[in-house]
Image 1 (cartoon, helix red, strand yellow):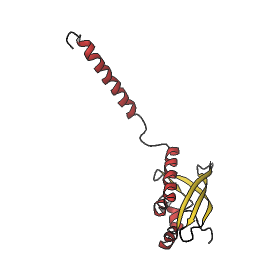
Image 2 (tube, one colour):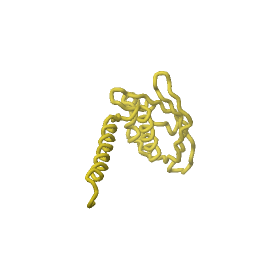
Image 3 (tube, one colour):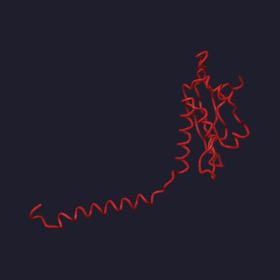
Image 4 (spheres, one colour):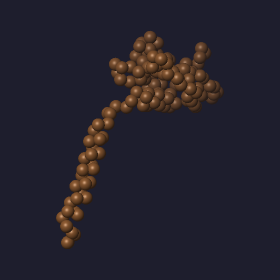
Length: 149
C-alpha cells in the first residue's frame, strides 16, 4: 500500500458503505407481512401437510372457530382419524368467489390401517380470510374420510 494515494484506498470502502446503507434503507421499506395470497398458500400448505402426516389435531387448529363450535370433534372422532393413513392429497382445482372465499377441490387417498384397503375420497375446502385474527381459516372442517360409513 506504500505509494498509493489515500483516495484510492478510502473511496472503494466509502462506496461499499453507501451501497450497503442504500440496501438497508430499501429493505426497511419492504412490507413486514405477506400478502393475503401468499398467506393463503402457506396456510393451505400447512393444512395439507398436517392431513398428509396424520396430524388431524394440528389441522383442526386451522379450522374456523365458529365451525369448530358448531361441529365439535370428540376424542372418539380423533381416534377414528388414527385408524387411517393418508397416501395422497391432490388439489383438483380452485376458484375464488365474489365474497373473497376460496374453494378448493381435493382428492385424498385413504388407507384403512386395519384392512390395508385403499380408497379415494373427494373433499371440497372453503377458505375465508378472518380480518380479526389476520389469517385464513377453513370453513368446512376436517374431511369426512368415511362419507357416511
